[in-house]
Image 1: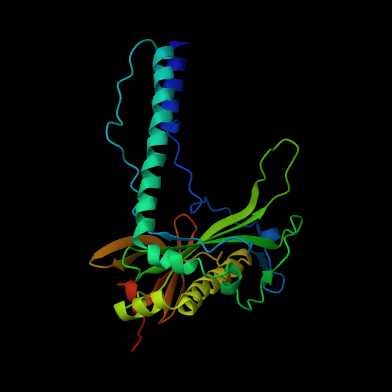
Image 2: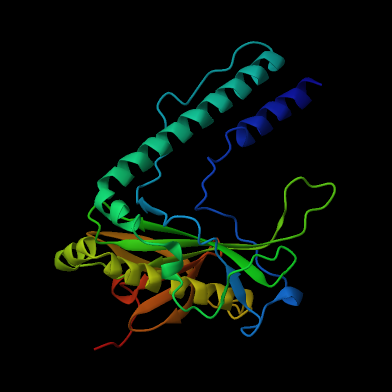
Length: 286
């Protein structure tokens, strides 16, 4: 019995401190082959009554000081202490992330204020894949939620498009499960300071740049749900230039051109990088 309690303690220690919930993070669920959606059938739905969601980009550092704790007493008492500590630690992490997001948002306030003057339906423009009606029973209709980001200099814009198809709710399940869900992440080519200044003075310029990010992401959703991205490709490690630093991304190169490189990472997310940021791919672009 004592061993069982110790096992429970160990299991709780590994699972008790759950990841903080973020609406810009999902675990990819790919469509089964029998449910793939052809290009002629593909439609997406976006609630255009929502405001443009543009956030400051930040590092998502969730570490907290004093997180280690010595549990004392018999196993039952230690288990109670562990649950309490897990709840406190999770709350502190959420507070830290909120504070970081608020600080990052403050740094791009001029951009956020400008975005408030833009209607969400303007980024759809005349996208032929758009459906203005939500049909929960349509298993070929993909819901999308765009979340835009900008760094503190407001020269690097990006988009995370959350895409999903709900399965019908069952009597046993209170929450609808996902038939499909994924993240499509698109990074724009960095702006010069002059381009940034023009952007901040002209809402139509911002609209065009957000529109380009959005349309690129929608095209990747269409290719993802059609099975176009499902053919196995040899993985490689890409060297992504981020200012003076270099990030390493492991994944499959799905598409590449002189403008962008499209990668499926190990989470099965689809990520678009400007070609100039990928240091170790020879594009033969003049």
